[in-house]
Image 1 (cartoon, rainbow, N blue to C red):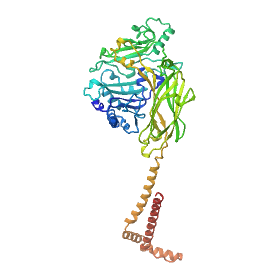
Image 2: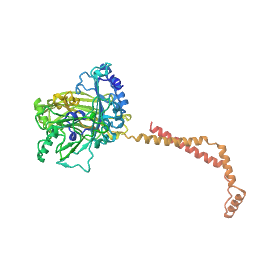
Image 3: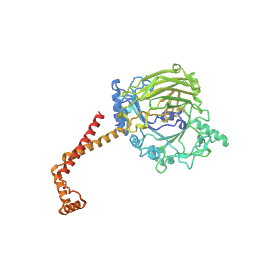
Image 4: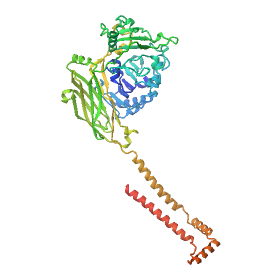
Length: 590
């Protein structure tokens, strides 16, 4: 049912719920990290197979359908100010591709549950049984991806041209007693197991799945580090890098024996080539659950292979009027492979940059400045190609697509763009406007470098994951999300004005209604009764006797008419005063 709903909209698309990937700690040059490292929030791109005039309407329908399916705010991408139409950054030249992102969208269990329902056995059996919510969301990184591809659009046969690919990427911290030891600023690798990470074990594969396998990949850097540890510990060479006993040696021990070991074909004759281990889950059952683990016998310090250049983005300037966006590229000190690859392709490094800026951040693209190794360079000499779509107020965001040419062996490179901050209507501000406004991550693609790993050809058809690892893809990095503070109005001022206005009108109408509803006859009778009670015979006699003793003239009793006239005069004065205040208030705010 999901395929029938989504296939009406797009030919090729990807949806992801993620948090920020740490390129320094988790790498970005290998095929797994380069493909699964995504920007924070929600990222959605789709390439439609509909007429050009129906693309925007199809995008709107797609966002609303995905929003209902995954319990997310993806429907906020339906407005034209929330998405863009890249020309060539995503290799779509027909103008039918749309791209949008929501950097502030949080990922929680209500997004994971619909994603799990698309699996054959959900989270009841197979590897999906490991998806314990508390264990997953306490990790450092969490990413859910849904990739739907259709090669035969419009056909009714779903298994001939439609492929639904689900990817879940999690970075977890193994449970260790006490603080982890460090050597030269690097953290020692801890021992781990599936039971310690997820609190569960796998009791066989899903009954409706064709295959269920687990793969452990030892990168070339890790194999090289194990080789160095072997030399320092004076361990015999036999049994440490021989693949038949590689999972059980004097450096580490695997809790389960792999069913197959595949070595990287590009470095087949070298001892430090990467190794891939395969574990068949179908060989395990309830009596013998699958609990893969790795226990280190000797301390090992290892770090992932980073991208050739580390991309970062930040803001320059201060105040709520103007500023500048800067994208910085720094060479990875631990990675020397990019220089070799650059020299093989030529004397220059080619970098694609794609950036979307909201309409209220008015970027001046003519202020573009390029710095290489700290020195200002000529803009046209370092830009091979550039496409700019200026923003339009409350209609569309600004889009910049640029190809930079940097010299081989560059250490640092940066470019800046100046901008002015716009003003929004009070109805356009979000509830947390004082927090700031997000600018989506920029996409940096290194077209010269390709993240892939080649293995032996005879295993290519046996292991489906090898097709994914051997597919040559460009190394992609995402920058940080920028938080731009804009000028915000005093949201309490309307409340204060409404409060004082209501108070004045309440006083006015209270006095007015009191004067209109008061009856004169009842007031006179009330005053006469009070005077009669106070002026009894004994009281009158005592007052006359006191006046004669003191030598004062005898005062006649106050009549009710005199008191009533005084009361009426006071009411009239109050009504006139309140009416004057109300008239002045209206004249002042007119």
